Image (cartoon, rainbow, N blue to C red):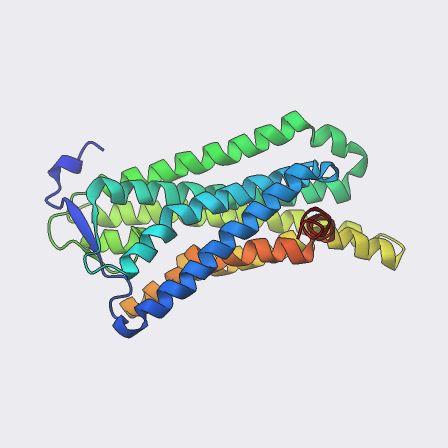
Length: 310
């Protein structure tokens, strides 16, 4: 980071949940349980798919990649947040803050790209079933996953470099529990802060809306194809393969749109902090639950794999 040495700030202090001193222990226990459940749920999904040969298909390969990205995303944010809830000194070094931002944005973008790839997989499976094995070959699936991770890494680096290229001259208190863009932009100084804010906002919104648009186009074609299936049983079976993915997409983009597309009017810092919990803790917590309960093949494979052992 070429201009990091021009910053007068060597560390930042998280304000986080300090406006709620009497609730911090409750927050710690709640978020700890949700984090452990998120890890357990994603590990169960990975173990089940790895051990069940009938699930060695492109759809479940993408689900494995999605579970890995969720594990890494929450690991980049939640353990630090839990430690700060029990600490009186919530400081984070300048470089550590940049690293946290890079990894959180990398895995966040990767998550969105993988959801888009999963939508394309369902589109090919339902709209072009005869060409599925050709279009979704093992080599092609591996490339889609690789490009998702590469794209997430590049965009994460772009956002992080843009923010930490700015000098930080004055106060170092971040009114959040994570090194996020908006709280850091409020601490930056210099004449090009507004330009950087506009550029970073365009990158995030373009990636969010671009992935969302591709998923909507995929499902528009899927719904049109399903409606042409003559039997009600056939329509139900075709749509059931998309139910879990579609539910996760609605949850993921619903919370993300609230964060990135919300009004820029005045609002409380406490509200921003609590809103941040939705995309850092709640969304990763819900995702494995949705896939486990809404996907019949995965649910039956989990019963066969773990229930006899229990």
